[in-house]
Length: 195
Length: 124
Image (tube, rainbow over all chains, first blue to last red; front, side, top):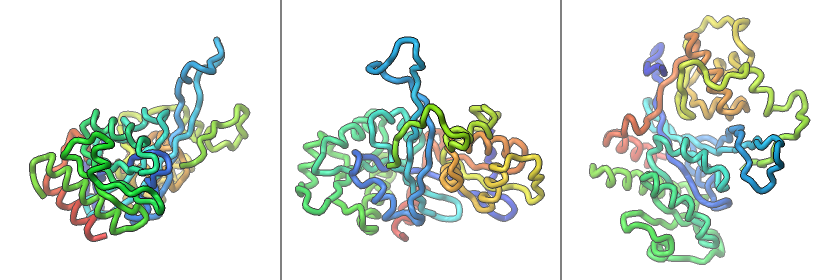
């Protein structure tokens, strides 16, 4: 069993909590992680063996492929006893099996939407709705991209009225903070214990 | 996002994708210790018999002089998460390291925790 000792030689071992940053490829996930993280985003690799899916199968030939999935993450020290990790979720569909582990125990999620390719965040929205994980949608306002209002995005994504939608600039720390704050308040609302 | 290339069929002897599994001695799980990607670990003893440990375990203990998550250990040492879990599981079961479990759905967050997270974000 994992030790629950939280005090060691006068040094506390903090507990950790995580928030997921999801969205399509290129939506700015790592940028958002980097703008609020106290460390430069780190990347960890998970080596996966997965059965290949039909198509190029050769009968009788080894039907497994090895794939490296990179996860980018950042860290925010909340206090001596608590550390918040922000994990960018791998965007490609074939890595969805990883989302299950990532979502387990997560406080909530940010779905970063790119208005040039709004459909790329549908899978993330579906996933979090299905898993009943609280999420907010943050529309990353790229330079020169079409600007939409929050309401337009809410309708385009068929979001529940209670799902917060914000416009943001993932490169800017204050903007990233506002997104995370909106998520934490939304989690609190869902628990019916207003912060 | 890093390259998603598959390793070559004839990987070099020092292929980083292969070697970690060798040092983990083929085990998939570290004994009974269940570690999460964000379990926080810390080195527990000053008297480390380095000869009794894998070199990678010694590096892990050096890194864990301060609390680190499994994911951070993996990233800093460039060892896949699954392998770090095995090596750390072994260290924990032998008393060389301690771990603290993360908040999970089995221990739902309290209002106090949410307030602390909110305060922490606002202080950034």
